[in-house]
Image 1 (cartoon, rainbow, N blue to C red):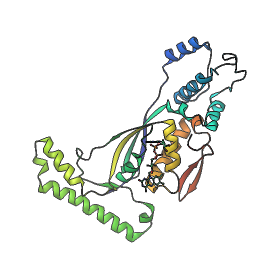
Image 2 (image 1 turned 180 degrees about the vertical axis):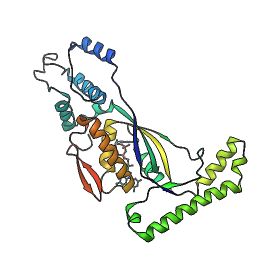
Image 3 (image 1 turned 30 degrees about the horizontal axis):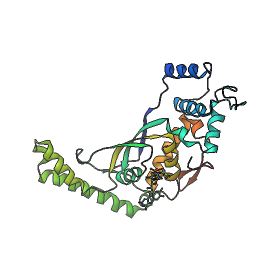
Image 4 (image 1 turned 45 degrees about the vertical axis):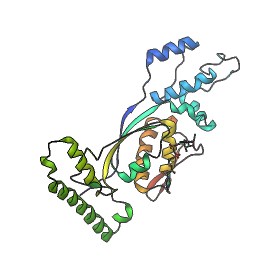
Length: 260
Ligand SMILES: Cc1cc2nc3c(=O)[nH]c(=O)nc-3n(C[C@H](O)[C@H](O)[C@H](O)COP(=O)(O)OP(=O)(O)OC[C@H]3O[C@@H](n4cnc5c(N)ncnc54)[C@H](O)[C@@H]3O)c2cc1C
């Protein structure tokens, strides 16, 4: 048995199509508009927000005499007033590796603004098992012994079943799939696996807030603590309202602008 921790890989993010954006800005009468947004996700969010009131420059809309300058102040106000739909335009693509089926089962409950591709344990045969060991178990010598022994026994069960049904000699993929699916039923829910998870920024904020909460499960708190660290550094203006407090050794990410 291998002991693992969730890993977060940001593998994609929304990108501005420069000629298209410049053409739109010329069309709307703001050809010289620029922003200091540190990322394209922040830039897209700002553009989508500003187009609502034509607030690229004062005077474009006769009702608007002043505009907020800069990505930071602009997006800070979007968060403050709860104009969350603006944050649905920018998408991020993550791969979470070495996460348990406990985590993936919780994660897929978040449906709005997300997309999921999950490693298939009908196709991918479990020969060796990896698992995250929760804090209470980790801190107990006896608990650790029971945990590791049990996972190792279940690993042996996978190997015994594979031998019993001679899956290694099976040529037909459809049969291998049926057998692999039958064997996985005796794998633990803590088995580590992989999930591809994409989301828009609005959905991500909601998931960070709910899944780093101290009432959430330890492994998903750890996972979204890591996600938070990554996105806070990369898209600072989309998470500028967040504050993190350590609870039980994991960050609890909080904001006064809940559920934007
Ligand atoms: C600490 C914790 C404990 C939990 N315990 C349990 C449990 O014991 N049992 C259990 O079954 N689940 C549990 N959950 C899961 C929880 O009930 C939600 O299913 C999960 O957090 C997904 O969040 P969401 O409903 O906000 O959906 P998301 O898909 O993240 O949606 C975001 C928001 O969009 C809106 N929305 C989404 N879908 C709809 C819709 N169909 N209709 C109207 N509005 C919609 C809602 O405002 C929603 O909050 C728990 C979650 C947490 C964080």
